[in-house]
Amino acid sequence: MIKRIGIVLAVVALATALIAIGCGRKSANKNADGKEDGATKPLYASKGDEGTITGKVSFDGVAPAPKKIDMSQDANCAGAPGDKNADDLVVADGKLANVFVYLKGGVVDQKSFPTPSEPVTLDQQGCRYHPRVMGIQTNQTLKVTNSDNTTHNIHPSPKSNQEWNKQQSQGAPPIENKFARAETLVPVKCNLHPWMKANIGVLAHPYFAVTGKDGSYTIKNVPPGNYTLVFWHEVKGEQTQAVTIAAKESKTQDITYKAGATARATSLEIGPALILP
Image (cartoon, rainbow, N blue to C red; front, side, top):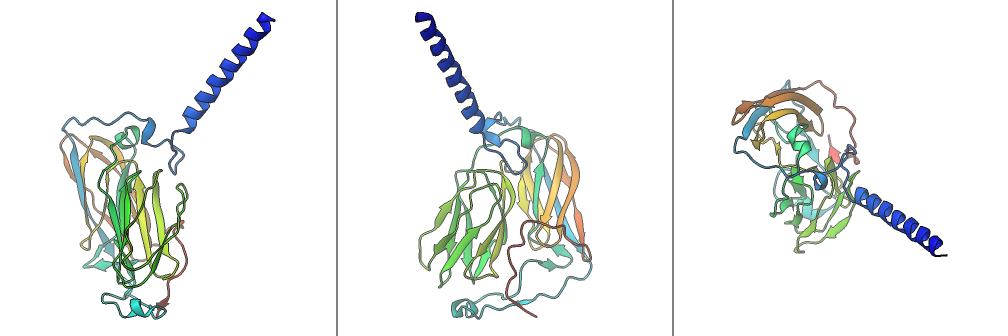
């Protein structure tokens, strides 16, 4: 009898240990590539030898004429000050804005990085999302504000993170949320105003940037190493470059999108905007 009890206790102990191991494995977040996020990786320790990557994204060819957005379904939007042109392809003086640029591979995928304490803000103004393209780290707070005199509906549609859909009236307090897993990029729409779109790049590290109106970008404090530099644009698609940065090096990496190139299919086709020819 005593022997049987001992065997049962041993089996129970083994089962408990296996469950604990299984739970431990499940606790690690997975990113869009199926790899574990920073929770299980060693923390990056700076050696003070980080470098900088800068560059410009050019547009080769004639950009299509901007199209007017029909905002007549909401008088508050139609009467709001500001530009009424579609902003999915913004080209000025041969330079392309709103390109999300980020690093992958090497140290940035092997180490974990602290989550910034300050939030990143996505505003709604003139019935448009500002900014159109933005970056954020995993578990960093996204703060959504409404500067318009109308009600909006914020609806991110991620693949690897939890989808959410919240309404925000004029004068309402900010909506705050977080993305637990890395994902590039998360499309955001407004169910009430279908022309309103934004894209959020969620990364487990801080090495990303978005090109300005002059096509320029800067990624600071890059650990020395070999990486893939990814350029993503919602209309023109994705390009990559191999880049090696030495200790304390300042490197320039430019790239060009051609007017006639066709973007590869992405998950960001979230419904047509109401656009007048």
